[in-house]
Amino acid sequence: MAKRLEQIVAIDDVALATEMELCLGGDAEKLLLASLDGNNRNAFAPRTIVTGFVVGRHNDDVVVDIGYKSEGVVAAEEFSEAEQGVGSKVQVMIVEIKPAGDLVLSKRQADLQIGWNQVLGNNKEGDRVRGRVVRKIKGGLLVDIGVPVFLPASQVDLRRAPDVGEYIGQEVEAEIIKIDAERKNIVVSRRKVLEEERKKNRENLVKELHVGDLREGQVKNITDFGAFIDLGGLDGLLHITDMSWGRVNHPSEVVSIGQKIEVVVLDYDAERNRISLGLKQKTRNPWEDIGERYPIGSVHEGTVVNLMTYGAFVKLEDGIEGLVHISEMSWTRQVAHPNEVLKAGERAKVMVLEIDHEKQEISLGMKQADSNPWDTIKDKYPVGAKVKGKVKNLTNYGAFIEIEAGIEGLLHVNDISWTKKLTHPSSELQKDQEIDAVVMEIDRERQRISLGMKQLTQDPWLDEIPKKLKKGTVIDGKVTKVTNFGVFIEILDGLEGLLHVTEMDDGQKAEDLQPEQAVKVKVLNLDVETRKIGLSMKGTK
Image (cartoon, rainbow, N blue to C red; front, top):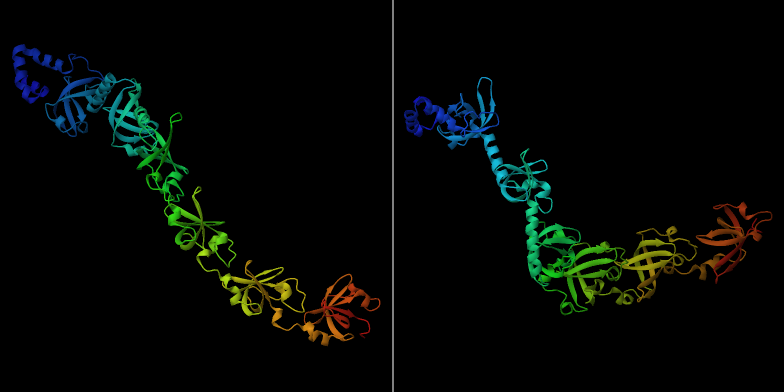
């Protein structure tokens, strides 16, 4: 009998069991076993939680006696080290009673059931609970509040978190929003707790908020036009224009999500709960004494920060930028785009041309910071001077010749040859060709130079042509152009005369002749003043 009792109770209770045996006789074992399951020895059924005692170990299992006709085993992994000692009192759940009377027990399921009973008995929907986030599951998180409960991803924070896994291991406070006792399912919301706290903070904040206050907040969201700052109950907008006195291309250059910053309250609309915040207002406005630091006419060095089609923005200091218009970049060049002259990030010397205090704008000039070469152009290139240059561009009316870097002159098509009637300079000139020319005229105000190429030689119409082409002279020629009124004939290098239809051989028509066809003609007349030559085919045979 005593040996049987030792298997049922803890070692240090043997004396008590023996005493019970002496007092009660053979009924002692029956009474003791009946007490082990909570006053009902016959309440052994699956899913029942009973009390037992650890009586030993068998392989990886712990042997537990619950007062039934046979002991049961529980996986050792369900016990802590302290709970595995012989004589330890434990609560287990009867998982299964096999036909032979063997017991399958579970301490883990018993602990879970007891925990659920405690949670369900002590809490209801709307109550707050605290627990630790244990793992991430589909749709949200699992939180241990004594039993595992579900925290949906949408209820983790005020705004849906990008990755709820970041909360694993954290202690959180949440509100029970749904209890399904039958399925042992509890859903909680941390968002509801945060919303209530936010509402209280908002009410307190509204009472003490004033324009001009310095407030600490946290960046909650960033957009293209600014950032929303949580002031602890109220969100305020920090507009991109109020982030810095200098240029800000995107708010992310100044702030980042989660960053704590101190801002100035610029405006508060209580009716719409809108707060305007500023960051640059914490520092002095650099435009306050702009005229003293950058007087008109002063020259400074700045950094090119942006290039537009109409000009370049140059930063003089943080918060102070000026525009160099494309027309103010060079005295000599026709700049089509600022990137022909400047590139972002480089240093540039500029002159302050104008300041608009109201609009906070500065007009700058690059060319004004250097001497104007057109001021001395007449001294350098007097009329009649011979110059060398390179053909930079060809147009219908002439060619632009660069005579030095940035200084170009126009060679009109009529000033290329004394004798040739040119319709386009490309018949005589090519781009990048080096030529000689004569300065014919300089217009400093309009920054224009007129050049001549034929003026390098004597005008053949004054002497040579009249001598070679006297009236009645018969000469070989070549058809250059056929018209309905006559044919143009080249009789000297580039020199043309007109063979009128009335001066053609009898029975011959203009269309009978073809370009490049060789013909023999006679000088009918020569007008030096108009520089025209009349030709005839009659009497040339």
